[in-house]
Length: 132
Image 1 (cartoon, rainbow, N blue to C red):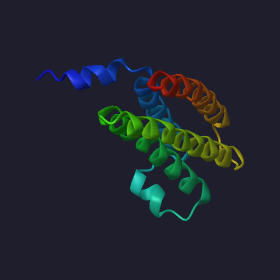
Image 2: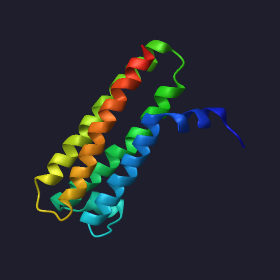
Image 3: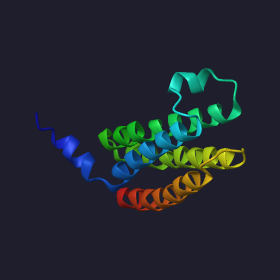
């Protein structure tokens, strides 16, 4: 069934970039933890597994936050929610820095994710300005 709100979300650049970042974060976590499941990473005592789990969970939280922002009808709350997205982006960036500080294979992939997060910050800035 066709949903106009779904079509609107798919056209948002910030939504598409957030989906891409989630997919990339999941692939990176899978690569550096040797294809561990999310629950295994969460329960692990290994520091790398914990960082990878945090990375994926923070990336996973970004997309619903964008949907929540777009569904908000009150312009003041919509702007407030949009601005709060920056905390998720910054948290993901910190997760990348933590992973880079450990001895892992695939630091190039983590750097690529950081580059994408910098791009997302720019998109976020334009997104917030469009709501003003």
